[in-house]
Image (cartoon, rainbow, N blue to C red):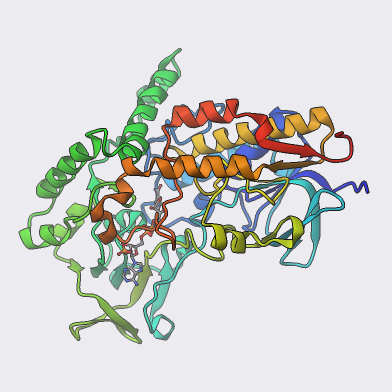
Length: 498
Ligand code: NAP
């Protein structure tokens, strides 16, 4: 049966993944797409995260599309509002906006085997059909409240970093912040000088490295416009990012990068924090790379302030007036900031809507049974015409923009062959998927994640099976593979394919 779907491609998510997917599809001649975004604006993480101090944590020269490089970032690490503006710029320049539907939450996706298309259900009860789906929902999107009793009973203001309430004036207030991950590292120094008192509740210290950040004044920005300057800066930036995450993490046993990083981290801590007892509490006891490290020149220093206190006693509960710790102390506060992160590799987040493939198989259940796996992080057998940007074992930890471009190169190759052959159903073979899964697991022995000390890191990188679904590859390899993998790893079927 031939059914004409509403769109050739539905892209779910209007963050940089969705925007990049749209642009790259358009460039490849697939212009009938619809970007569907839950929020009322584009930009994903940069639309939702507006907390004080929010900024990118890898250099901006890498955190942008290769085909749309800016010369006017105001800092090496651009503030969040510039990333949000960059997203707006991209949707306008590449004409993505008119093919974007905002304020639309997808709640279900079901493959229609008769029509070789996906039926997407929205929270408003609409159905959108598309031959192909590109899942571009990201991973760090659903704020995770802490599993601490009493949060709802607090009489003051509670806010999660990813849903910052700018109507709340923190000046002169007693504030508690729970969590010391990347978001807290940016919030703490940004609010410390305004509040009356800040109590930081730390469970696991974060590795904090010096940040090679600086303002890019007009002369620097003008220099970036000189021939070759932008390319050279990007190359230096990409090399730095590659060394600090993918190579350090995936080739931990083979390269001395992590050891150098740890020495830098310890020296940074010694220089930054005056009180030896506080310094001791801020010292990580797990290998650098077990969880996402941070870069900051102001976070550790904030603990020298007389109005900032580091609390490491575990939290027993939240009371109407504040935080009670296990030692029986009540920390009374006016505002409670939850810097407690996001749902990651867990039920209800991969993605946050139900996905029903061929034969009525549920994606979440399939993963529960088979562990997280996806061919090059893009495709899962049994889920035809469904491609993910950030599927399991897709992201190697370098710039997120590398991931988007690499995965889209993979997806576009599939769609091109389908177009050439008239196929309407594109599905990765179980054999190709199994081969890839075996390959990624086989590289574990070199990864930092499986060092014994990582068991104490409380890292969200680990899923319920103890797997770390990151792609254990250097970025160049991911780029090479996406443009060279054997297209026969997919079955192309449908009306016109014999
Ligand atoms: P996160 O890294 O998951 O940190 C959550 C923090 O909350 C951790 O310190 C965690 O402690 C603590 N926590 C959670 N539940 C707790 C509880 N019940 N009691 C006490 N502490 C609790 O979250 P995030 O800081 O929002 O960062 C998430 C990711 O977003 C980052 O890793 C990064 O990839 C991304 N991010 C990027 C940027 C950027 O680019 N600029 C900025 C922010 C975030 P444990 O460590 O003990 O679990």
